[in-house]
Image 1 (tube, rainbow, N blue to C red):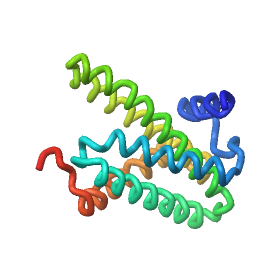
Image 2 (tube, helix red, strand yellow):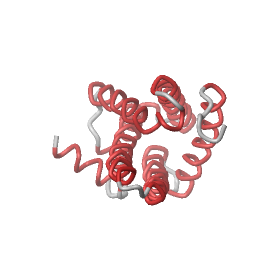
Image 3 (cartoon, one colour):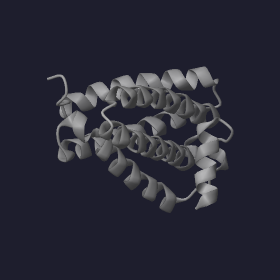
Image 4 (cartoon, rainbow, N blue to C red):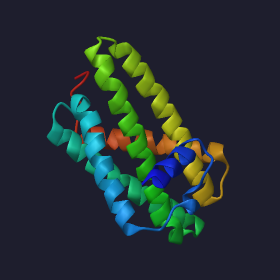
Length: 170
């Protein structure tokens, strides 16, 4: 377990690639469930309740997996899908845990602005790390990977918000 956590930390700081991850359907399934559960915990306030947050995270998971399959198929690297998807999910779990770890104490201390700033910095870092995964999986420059991830995020959030409208700001 420690080796897996170390791997994802090194992946997050662009020192490893998805090709270094074992091709394991069991690890993929575990990380998919954790990703949805942690995303639901992080998204409950945004979506107004746990049910909507769960639905939004399941939809995001499906969209992400399809996007990765389409990109890899376009580049002729479909065999890399399981490792690439597992790397995406593991980074999502890592970032989600960090967000939960920061948000709880910050909210308790009444410094939600600091928590929002840290969430923003983590989101930027996550996009760069996910771009790094695409760099390896697709054989493209890091900047291209980051642009793809940012574009996907905007598209996916707009689609998800149509199905599960955010409760904040409405």
